[in-house]
Length: 288
Ligand SMILES: [Fe+2]
Image (cartoon, rainbow, N blue to C red; front, top):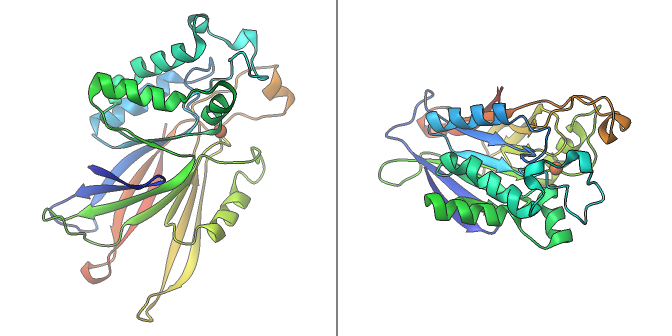
């Protein structure tokens, strides 16, 4: 796997293979909303999925809210009962240090680490960039080259021949950490329909934030430069979370939150069509 930055919000991930066929598949582990430092983070599942990605040597992608980071002095959401005893010393440094300790074994496989609203909120209120700090420390400890990415961006995924030429067009993956309320009934379908209009070039759209899993493939009529009609699908995927909700009281209960969809996603990048008309598509499976 090679990674290169094209601009602030665009990276290209290239995977070299000897030949391509319908059996050619490569897999990424995509996760969002881990809320690692929260008491409610399911670290057991988080570790299990990261171990599986390491075992399979898959690129790992984080799409925001790795940190929960709501217990800072300036945060109105802070609650004394929610802070871990191990964070009572220097809160933001402690959660970064614990993150680095936890992620060091996986650092070489973490390809992309994007910001979420919990990290941008800490930046606004406390003037520190938690993800930047964690990536720097991981780089010092393990020599990893994790690409820090903004809240919204693009990942171009392509297959290369051994001579460096491409097999077919890259799969264009748009992502955002996510926005708005948690959409308990539509589960992101309305946002996805809006994004379909705003991002006509995306083949796959990934987003997190609302802690609901949804896959919505939108079929489209297309036409090539040469006038060849074809159809394709733009696939919208809402990511699950690693935060659990088992409480009987508190803010989430009073807001009527239900249990979230738990885990991450395996995204398989596969090939469709023959040599003259090859296209990449993405298949999504739950990491449970
Ligand atoms: Fe979020």
